[in-house]
Each structure stands twice: as structure tokens, then as C-alpha cells.
Amino acid sequence: MFQILLLTYVKDESDLLLYAWTTVAGSARANLINFMRLRKYCTCSFTWHFSWRKNLLTILVLFANSLVNLLYVSADVAQLGVMM
Image 1 (cartoon, helix red, strand yellow):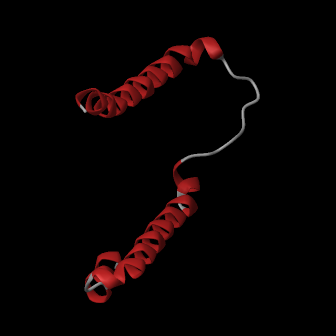
Image 2 (image 1 turned 120 degrees about the horizontal axis):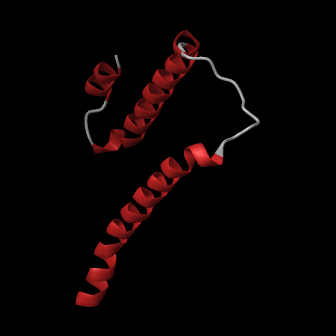
């Protein structure tokens, strides 16, 4: 449905706002449907007790991955600054 709307209504550069709204509406609709079907697959509950020892390695791996990604993205700008 989303692709059909894009192909029929967006014709040239002046339809940029229509393209943006169609994209946002399609994504919001898909996320809303997924949220409504969430209870079928899992249960959500709050936990007040959190075991840091059990999850510390996973947290550190995710932090390291984020840090390496940040350095990789910033390296291009730094190299271009040195070259200029």
C-alpha cells in the first residue's frame, strides 16, 4: 500500500513534502500495528532488581561497539582536516 501511494502521488521534485509525509505515515502505521501485536509474542513487565554482574559484559560490548563506530565516523572528518 505504501509503495503504491508513493508511485501514484509523487511525480517530481515539488512533491518532496508529500513524499516525506507518506513515508512518516507509513512507518508510523507499521510501528503501531507491530506494537498492538506485541502482546501475542511477549509479556512486558518492570523489574526493580537488576543484576549488574550478569549483564556487565553485554553492556561493555555494546559500549565498545558504539565507541568504535563513533571513532570510525569521525576519522573521515579528521583526515580531511589534516589534508586541507
